[in-house]
Amino acid sequence: MTPDERAALAANDAFYAAFAGRDLAAMDALWAQALAVTCIHPGWHVLVGREAVLASWRAILANPDQPRIVSGGADARQIGEAVLVVCRELVAGNPLVATNVFVREEGIWKLAHHHGGAVAGFGG
Amino acid sequence: MTPDERAALAANDAFYAAFAGRDLAAMDALWAQALAVTCIHPGWHVLVGREAVLASWRAILANPDQPRIVSGGADARQIGEAVLVVCRELVAGNPLVATNVFVREEGIWKLAHHHGGAVAGFGG
Image 1 (cartoon, chains in turn yellow, brown):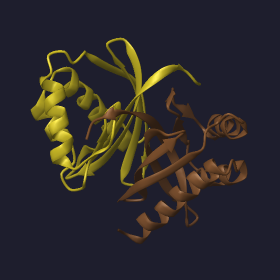
Image 2 (cartoon, chains in turn yellow, red; image 1 turned 90 degrees about the vertical axis):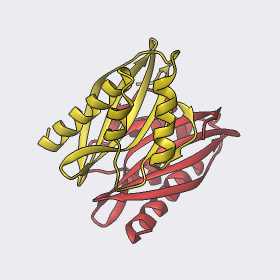
Image 3 (cartoon, helix red, strand yellow; image 1 turned 180 degrees about the horizontal axis):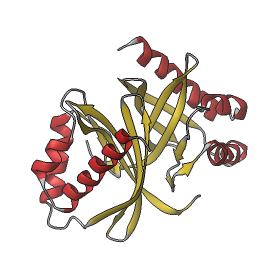
Image 4 (cartoon, helix red, strand yellow; image 1 turned 30 degrees about the horizontal axis):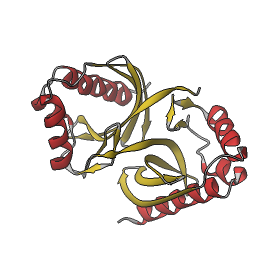
């Protein structure tokens, strides 16, 4: 694992900590500023741009019925200036899998894209 | 749009053409060789590595009950040496959304990661 992959995995952990802790400021700071970010919540169409993506997180983090999330099994692959992280999520006991793409801005790894989806309980 | 983004979108089109045409040889050629590829089919856990990923495609493309797929609305963003494509899929009339990550190998854009997931009919 490269140092960049390790740093992106730490950013991935910070993303789930912000999610679990309902910390909108931390969530906002985790998303890239310099490129058009995208986010696909489970079952949603793609959200494009910081405004739409952060508005969705504001609603999710403010929702008192939003179940707790934990993540694990993260694996990172550096592709040039991006790091692709695939990890598992557990939301209210339901298994999901996520694709998270990180880019470096001023030395800090930021989220460029998040795609979360449910696991139906089959497959490899 | 950069020339690399255009070239990756053409590779994205080729991916869906191979899928729709049940063309395993074309599908095989589309996946990267030099890095550990990953694939998340809708509802599945992540498949890691060329062998597991291509075995899944072999089963899908050989399945006579596999519904037809069309794709559209693809958008590409270059991040250094990777291109991130987000697009819509329609499988048997059901809407899905996909994240496809492309890398260049010997001048040709190849799939490094595919993540497809159902759209539940809500969201932005």
